[in-house]
Amino acid sequence: MLSRVRVWLNRTYAENVFFMDQLRRNPGDRAVEIHATHGDPDSPVLAAADTAELEPEGLSPAAYVEYALDQCARRGIDVFVPRLHQAAIVAHRAEFAAAGTALLAPTPEAVAVFENKAIGYEAVRSVGVPVPPWWRVRTADQLLAAVEDLEEAGHQACVKPAAGAGGAGFRVITRSPLSLSQLSGYPGASVQLDAVLDALRRSGEPVDWLVMPRLAEPEVSVDCLTGTDNRVRLAIGRTKNGRRRGFTLDERWLAPARLIAEGFGLHHLSNIQFRMLGDRPVLLDVNTRPAGGLHQLSLCGVNAPWAAVRLALGDDPGVIEPPFLGQDYTVLAGPRPLLPAGPARQRPEPAEVALPAVPTPAQTAPAGEVLPL
Image 1: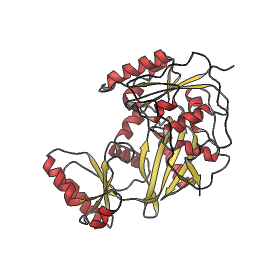
Image 2: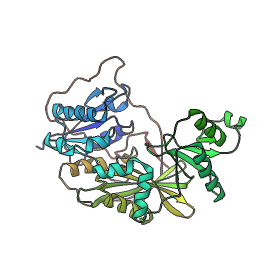
Image 3: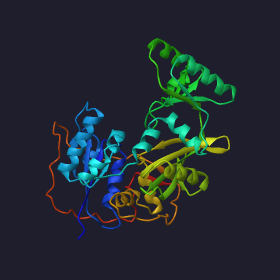
Image 4: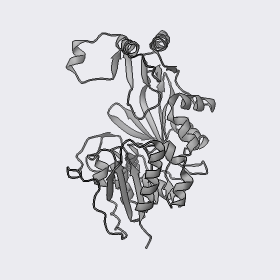
């Protein structure tokens, strides 16, 4: 019998409970044991893991690497999927390998390029991938000039941090004053230009923001699995247009994503996002980590997390073509159990035996998480 695989996810997004579910439901019936760490005791990934610990707070990147190496040695980790301090961790890949742990993460060079969106835009533009016009601003005067340039070209401006994850810090710039209609609805992403300028001038501190046009839908997130030989094994686009989600193999999206993944060493799992500027796709963002929605590819008959773990362990799955494209769907919230409240920092460890694999159900997406349209 094949030995179990021990996988560690550190301080990851709540959606990765589905990533964990798919590892356990792998088509090879391989036993998988999952370790999770987080700073929030109420993170659902801690409850979904086989073993879990709260992470120490305030560690520098270098100290976190030492903590991570200790976790891998003590826990017998075969595959580590790092999110927090990814740049510092991948710089020590050889030390993790010496401890018997494979990193499911890109090269240090790739992480460095795409940690900052401005640097990433410059890099992909140099290889011919279209990017939106953008300005890197640090002061109120620079922000005002960038907004005026965009408005003169007929665009609505938006702003986001040059370095950041997800939609944190994204705002749409408006010149319209605050109205009662805005206060009667749900909070939105719009922020009044004069209020932003005033806040910047009062703070007296520089910022590091990108100003760019507000791009149109559809948004297409291309999930890629790339080997250390820089060849893409899997590329599937997930489309988002309002509430409606779907899938695509259109080369308008997949070809530039492959170019980026293969050209910049985005080994293992990455997520490359595009939106529309007028009638053409342009790059929105590059994530050097698995996307929170990666599990949705199960609706196309693909278990991307397990294929990535196989690849990290040297068991090359080869080129993966989805057997079909799932129908359009929407995403719903659903309940997940948490660990009992209290000061406990660690769940009891199971006996050190190979765990039974969880049988694969007919539909691998958790019930209630996606709903066909």
